[in-house]
Image 1 (tube, rainbow, N blue to C red):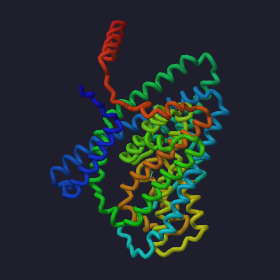
Image 2 (image 1 turned 90 degrees about the vertical axis):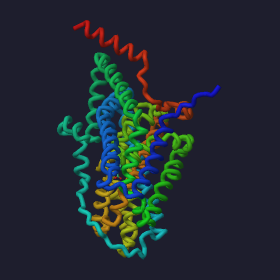
Image 3 (image 1 turned 120 degrees about the vertical axis):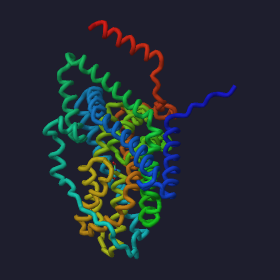
Length: 449
Ligand code: ASP
């Protein structure tokens, strides 16, 4: 008898991504992506656009309540303030370290290969530099003046600050707060169910997002700036498969291969949405259910990492700086490059993980070292596609550091990590029993009234 093989959600998402690339390339190649064709107007900028935006919006909808409830239950789970402080310091240190290594490797690779040398490039697009926040402002911004405003605008550091404070205050209430603690844990479970429901449509959404991006952008642009793109992607891969994997092995003695396998889902989501922030629900779920990190650590390290840790973005800044410096014949010297490293690391702390933010950080770096801002115009065209790739590296860093910290804090389930099937996200089906329970619940509530 033939055994029925069920495809896992990851396989379906991968398939969605692959089909998205194929369909996108076909539409772009045949010129059907313009709005004066039926396909362009109704499929690419109609259907694909609508599905993609709806999906990203649904993920964003989950981020704030998910972070609040998981952080609250995380703080209540840890139960003491000194452990919290230690987890905070360790993750801050590791996030800075990985970002600094990332950009140092990127600069060394790009300079030794002489990327951009002899390029006679002229900028066709002008780029308006956006102000990057000053360090003092970053510090001040951690405290929310108005928590509703912080939630409405998704200020992650402010939300983290408020939730931790609230968690500690609940702990201070003592045993009287038991019903509240239980409710928070239940709400956390409810939020996770919402993530499951949204994720069950991911294969279609990923298909739509990628098909639209590739139909609009094509891949030809990538070839035009071939050397920049190739060195950047090489540096991103080195970071993923060498730096992060070696650090992971050193700190945890666990298998980096298993880590990378289980991160595939998170990487695809980051690639499709170009936003570490929008990927938080998926990262959190993968880190806790698939990689075995306890919520007490993950609920802090994941949203914190999405905001302050951007290894992929830092790598882009390193390669872009060398590329533009060489293309304009500017010699930055060792001190120039050290400034670039420092600025990139600092800039990544103050900026949120949303699409395109890397360019804003780059303008800050360029201003600091005196590179012409119009240089950014040269790489602007390819940035949308490269943003997808570097966001996948950004979230991989967040997840890797989360496991390292959880292991060191003994907030980690090794068996779960080593089990390839652990926490695999299956599609959500509201089965008959659940339907029956819901019907009963509704009937009883009606009777009461
Ligand atoms: N899109 C990136 C992120 O969300 C940031 C960037 O490099 O632009 O992590």
